[in-house]
Amino acid sequence: MTKEAFGLSENSKLVQGGNMKSGKVSDTALRRSVLKEVQKVNQGTLSPTVGGGAGVVPNCHVSGGLSRAGEATGAWAQNGDEMSAAVYSAMQTVSGEGLATAYLAAVRAANSLAAKGAIPQSASIAITVPESMDERDLRKMHDRYCDYLQKHNIKIVGGHTAVSAVVTEPVVSVQMLGTEDVQGLGSSESRGTEVSVSIPAKTQKTKPEVGNCEDFLGLDIVMTKTCGLYGTALLAGHFTDELATRYPRRFIERAAEFLAETEKNAEGYLAVADGAVYVHAAAEGGVFGALWELAEFAQCGLEIDLPAIPILQETVEICEYFDVNPYQLRTEGVFLILTEHGNRLCESLEEKGIPAAVIGKTVQGLDRAVRNGEEVRYLEPNRVEEYERVMAAKRAGKQEI
Image (spheres, rainbow, N blue to C red):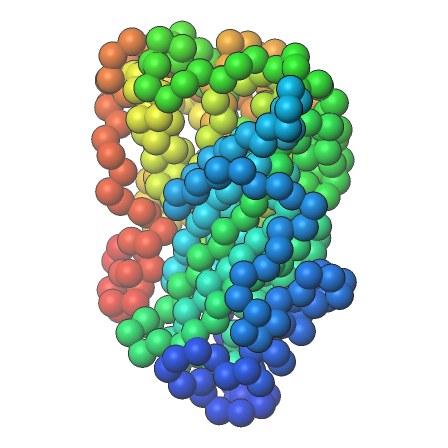
């Protein structure tokens, strides 16, 4: 895994032209560095053009869908007495991740859809980059985004690219539309792992309504993969040489490879097909942040067993080096699932090669307790993003975090 894969770029001369100026990217640069790759992804169909504005969503009928940043929301399309698949929209905005910014925004949006059991169909992107960013880096950032979409068969239907003097790091928003996975296609190889699910929609349970906390009580909380996946990969990629002064290089490289796990989201589809009450895609704020968001959604309390939360030794060591809390470290690719049958679901996921563990239960009240033996702490609204804290300290030139 190269440094470039983690948003690091050597100071380089432009391949073509000079540094870009504030305002919309020139038509020439847009065609050369953005739309050319879009056309490869869309294979000549429905490809956006300069000045084309909104694009048509391929093979998708949207009826009344709404989206909120960071969430996936659904809409039903009704035709007579027949009910067609729901259409979902997810939007994610990411900044400050260098050349990985657009890629991460796409991964988060796709994972948000997977948590609803919806297969991503199309994506739109808005990119704002600083004047200091050259066209070659814009191309690399956008190419990585396009590679991800092409890998997962997601079509590009629109976008906007601009340069601004008021931003110092790339800012990217990605909106995805997806349709309900009624044929069990969402967990195919194109979604990140070789598994398949086929459970008719009519056998799935009716999901509880938001605000009806009684429906969420007494459920098992299942966590997939391990905490701090993405943050560990980022820190290992950004600080390879520094970490190599303490740990073997292969140890650090293995941690950097966790990045590939963040875009695997088959468990979202599997959990929905299994009748899970609620599925949440974790991201910023780590496992603790995701647990807080889950509890806020369900308006319930939590009883969490800290030793039950899966964590890899690479994450433990790297977090210890930077003196950060691994449970508040970015954890894209991890899903939290509320279900009546936690152990059964874990066994099913393990059979598909997806690590999973029951880490607690939902309870009456609003206390979100995390127990470590006799010690008890209570979750609070997450105000600390550990990865950002490390990066801010490094940018400030501090010797100690």
